[in-house]
Length: 86
Image (cartoon, rainbow, N blue to C red):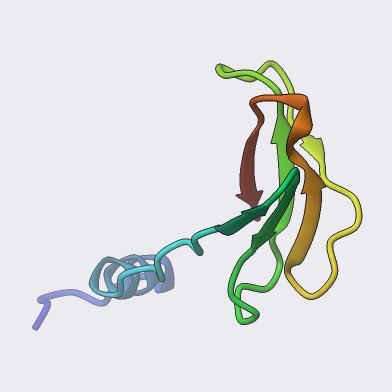
């Protein structure tokens, strides 16, 4: 296909161009009173949940208490924003 030998980095670059990365996981939520439950798929490994009170965010804080890709947080404090970070 090519008239010259390709360097390993070029082969990898071509391969990566043909494969699409998996889509990022979505955060599911449910609200019961002031308890907000956040969860994401079990196969979405290597992610940490982070929180900030405002956007744009000057800093994101790790959310503690996550067990099996799920956490309950107190939603009575008003607005908050969450993201998964890998």
